Image 1 (cartoon, rainbow, N blue to C red):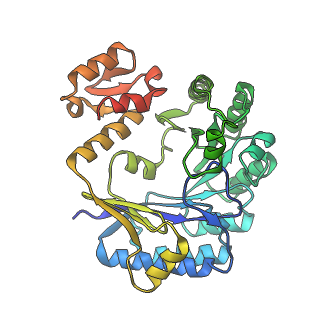
Image 2: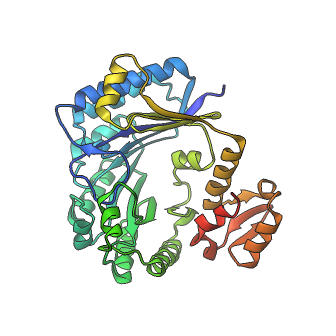
Length: 367
């Protein structure tokens, strides 16, 4: 088996639960965080004994990984350094919420080998941040960005959201322009989706919140135009980067590479197998610290499943998908080209600008 080069680590703690977030998370409980950190390293020990790891990327996601104290982060990241061969490490990312990064914590993350920070700004409008249930305000977000730059981070990503309840196109334009003025190296811009098991989903079901697909399309069009004009390359439908700053870790997902997930709810895909760890950090820690497997769900993938995923993910990317992958879909391909949703370039099929707005529908044509 080839060595596994990509590791995702899930740290579920949040100071506040955002009403739109569908990722597994739980309120921060300081009495549990040390035990949880120990469990993560024990889980990594078990995986190191099972798989050959030659780490190219590590991504600490959540939740809010920076909700851990500086001493816990030092214990955790130091533990990863001691257990893994990091001589080929190209990128180590940590997600951070504005307001959760002090100058001391930022300096420590740099010292511990973090090379990239993904900052969850979402909006520069304080009223919209309140609607989203965010703990920070725009001033704290800007302050956090400058703290990270001052600490020496040369690769900062800013996460934004559009299609928010009550958001205007003028507010979105301001958010884009304010972000560009800070000159982050990478920008993620996602449309709000109403995910099951969230407060927003229930409010949407009751008719309190409505989705306006035409407005969402206008927000997306503006993001593409404004960010491209500012020199950001749209290398994936929701992700824009200055040349050389595309996320190595996320590209590995989209290219269908094997990856290992550590932590509660984390997915792993290795070869033709996929599994997910239990979605409860207490159960996860109990299992791991008792020497048991934390896996809660597993499945064997089929060639058909892998092919469908490869098509859907490749279409989201700037390079598109090799024509050979769609050779059995001649009629569908021609129809999508005639509708102006797909085009051919250097033997690959790519979404057109119009097609990017309908990416999921295009992918469904090849299922």
